[in-house]
Image 1: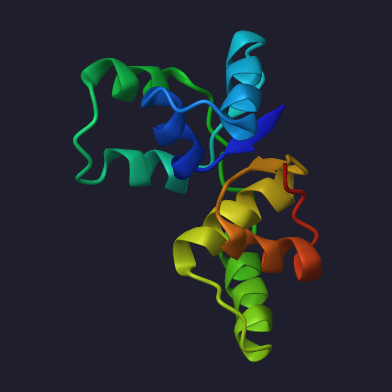
Image 2 (image 1 turned 45 degrees about the vertical axis):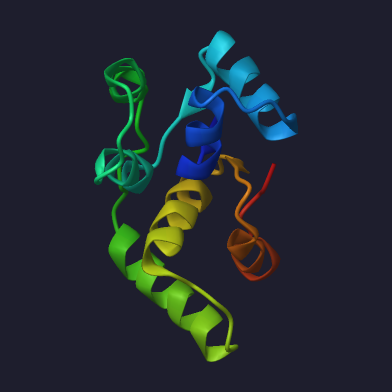
Length: 124
């Protein structure tokens, strides 16, 4: 199983071909894609996306928050901020979902590198 962030999903459904969208296509083919809840919220927030894209996203399984998720997210985000690193709330929530389930994240967003380097997030 792998997770993906919204940037890779949007590129994929816009027909952009690159190494990340190829990996996403493979995960979809083998039913190996699961989404953090925040990614679903991002996709549904004000984007003009085709209905079939939104339907496909809503059919995918979701990483449900685990016990202590909110506290771990806040603590881990605080660790990065204390190091003067960028740690947007949405990114922290996505990263924590993946860390909790030990699911690698497929992303094109370099901001996740801090979560990887200091908190153990596995990036693809």
